[in-house]
Image (cartoon, rainbow, N blue to C red; front, side, top):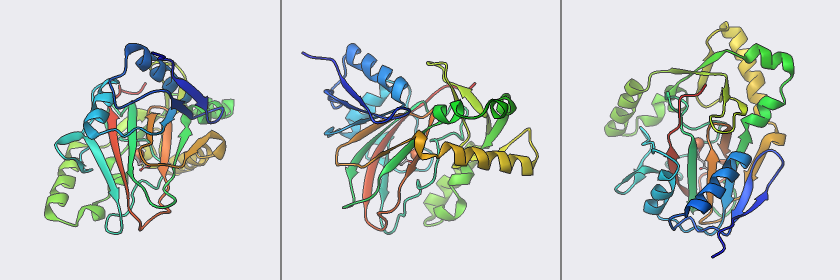
Length: 279
Ligand SMILES: O=C(O)CCC(=O)C(=O)O
Ligand SMILES: [Fe+2]
């Protein structure tokens, strides 16, 4: 059997399309190693024609590490580790902002795996940006200024109270999530634990402030970094077909789910692999 996966880069900084691999079956050690290596190199991998069930998606994700169970998002039936993002008229999209997943915990996810299950007729693309490319293209004086700084990340910034008041049960779940997830701090520049490359690690979704700076300084610096990170040069944009799968390195990327299809329906399944404390 030919176990060599095909990799076609979608751009110089970020993104690659992978083929000759069936993610619904257990991967051999050789296949997994190639996939992992490609992920480290390209940060986001896209695969087509992968009719993956929640069980299979969980098993694939578990090859990369321990899985995260989301405090508020609903999950697949009997499979807590698979988030179901089902957006429609009465559940508007809420990932149409640049963010890195779950940076509000001390060990934010290393990797995420997203599968498309039901798509609108058009629209609903996802964009990813490389925060390695963003870091590397900053000028030397700005890099020096950011070194050693820490930022606060807060669950409540994206998961706002007013969105969880539809039922009493939902509201209680949100309140428990807030209690369990007080704001945490992470370095503004992090080093990838495997590749050793440095990346910007602030995101508009969850970062509230740079703790060593005044409020005015912090706002100015964060706005500068947010607008830099989201330059098209550092991005890849994917137009989904049904049964596509995206795998991204959540330590060194941000993403944005385009909500242009609203109020049409769109259903995605996500598995989230826990990471280490950023350094
Ligand atoms: O629905 C998407 O395209 C991405 C949603 C998202 O932000 C996520 O799964 O982490
Ligand atoms: Fe996300």
